[in-house]
Length: 446
Image 1: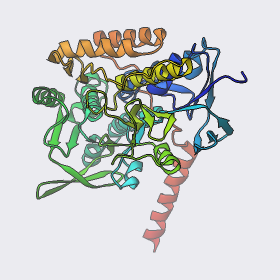
Image 2: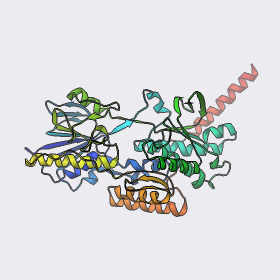
Image 3: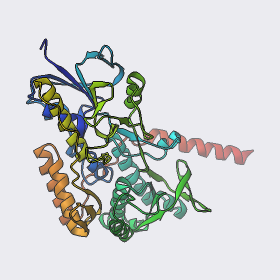
Image 4: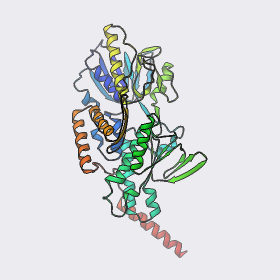
């Protein structure tokens, strides 16, 4: 191991994992560090949040993916400090020296200065977020079934999704499909079709980055699933069970038990560490501005890739924060490093191969801009399904997801509606009930 060039990769998402795979037989030593021990296929995370598939179908341990590469070591640890002069990283279990550093720590939710909203309106970036959202959605219907008060029932069956980008549209469509198709015959005292699903967007239309025809189709698909779309509307305040919105001069407060956040993202904190330690520049979202080969200005041994990177490609286009872009950057940087180690000519600047963008709204309902053609409806949905299944890293995952989707398609049954978390204790409920009853007796006696 002594004398081998040591490449350290911080972050095991698409960009970091594909860089590690591409360096797997490069002759250098590779260490992959991540807070989690698994790679998560985030594009399908909303399906975990709405019970379509279990989390294990879209997550796979890093060391399983990289097991055949004997020169790659996986460490589950959080990196919190960098010394670029000594080329040393500090993580929760010690220190690590590197010759080349690849940073791919991604993004997190952005509440635009209102971080207190996070406790009331969770976003969707991790398995924990997805399971929390799943619990909130199905718990709301279960509580509504148990209660008699129509006002409280309506509050419980009201869902607000803030942000109508791809994540928000997919979440709203999935909840609409649950309420209007999947669960229609599952309850006896409530009608899930009475659920109020509100999608709020500050821009003039849903999916602002898409072609106008696709935006209109997406909106139509959402409305067919019972989703009320409010565009040109901004959230001014929200709490545990309400959202205050402004549209022009009109202000409205909506009571809702479930509020979900899909309105924005911000670069991970490690971007700030890089800026502080290396003088790197950040854009307004906290992404690190990099050179055309994804390296830091003044630090050719440090690369930033994936969602954390602010990169303009060889054609002069801003590289989007999408999984295909992250995969391409991971492979590209691995090739840059291999060329350096072999003494070959530098690689040409990164050029993003844009394969298009897609968003699914529900069963047989999707929109897709494939550059050569723009699709809506079932054709777009079929291509979306094929692309996402093919993009899963593990063959077993691909087979499981395919079988689950096929079963759901034929039966309209969701696969995983479990409400996780500790249920209330019977003893505690009984004690609380008697305490309230005793208090009432005392009040009457007084």
